[in-house]
Image 1 (spheres, rainbow, N blue to C red):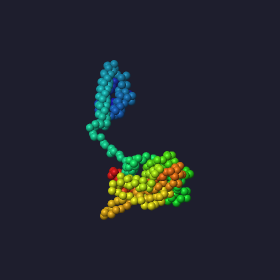
Image 2: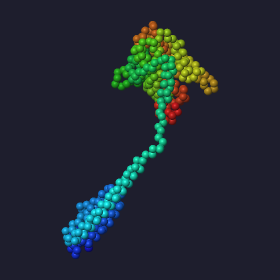
Image 3: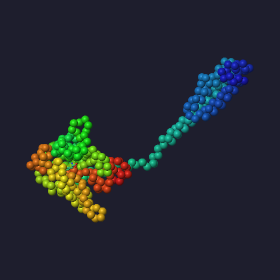
Image 4: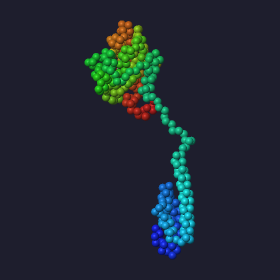
Length: 354
Ligand code: PHE
């Protein structure tokens, strides 16, 4: 018996090594079929093919023994080799098929789609409370025949200050805690929406009735009632017979539309460089205990004739009124919001309430 796989010593056997070669083939067949059956994937199957039938396999050694055999021995070994080959190929093909089927089944399972599952619904978005209140305010004025105008948030000092009667050394420039835009000579983040008054008056002829919603900026420290970014709705009306009574009537209508039909308003004397006279406007509220309370909601006044003429409107012919409403303030009053930061924090629990 020889267990020399290269077959170099097999020729010393009496039959030229035939029995030994056939015994080796039988062992190889058993081993190969077991390896094929065990192959867990295509890679293992390929490995078995190389190991049992490749150039450096034991099988090659067995084939080399042919030359030492008698013609009859060659015939026998040839048949045994063919038998091995047929058995190997068939087992290999069967296993290959099995593995392919299993792989397909695994993939189908993996990519399984359950078309009966209900869709995962995204909660529908909605405008932020501030946007809702802005739209409500604007709707009230659109109902009174106003147009909507807009202007830039990075604004020229000429519009934010000069054309509104706010001189370069006017204390209002400091009081407003202006944020300047770095790298530009005279550009600020607008401290109010009033510059759009000047933009409208320099480009449109009276009669004018506009509301201007938008963001405004001041270098304020953040607390429950202050934010460096806030929003206003500006109003401007210019015409031939506009009086303070029109201003009062307009603001009363607005307050009742916004806060309730039983509201009253009062105007307290105030000062703005661009209106004369100027007023701060309070709206009445029922306080707990039955008392009447007043809450400030906006600044207003008659457009200063000097502003009209700087903007190219004849002050002898036209008069105007203007007002500036703080949107956060209105939203806080209407919805009982205690902290202005709630508007900007994007806390889903707050947002979901409105
Ligand atoms: N622009 C003023 C402010 O921001 C409000 C205002 C607007 C006052 C229009 C009078 C007229 O405080």
